[in-house]
Image 1 (cartoon, rainbow, N blue to C red):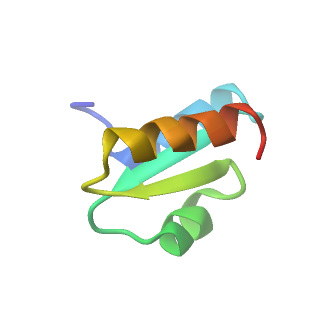
Image 2 (image 1 turned 90 degrees about the vertical axis):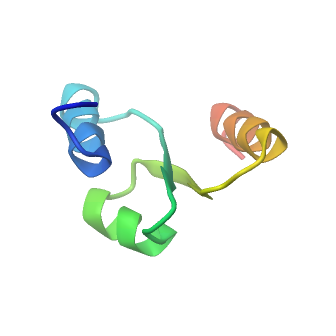
Amino acid sequence: MPSLDGLSAIRALTNLNPKVNVIAMSGLASHRQVTEAIGDNVKAFLTKPYTMQELLSTLHKVLHNY
């Protein structure tokens, strides 16, 4: 994303589709900080580094509305 940071990209996606489900990832920010900055579209948050199993589990939960 050469022209957008993560928060800006999420805002742009939310503007295109208000129902978009977001899985945010960061090595710096907390889930609370991201949710406050973005809103309810953040369905999950992964802290870097994360494992492949954590990513797959999170994707499954978000896609199946757990």
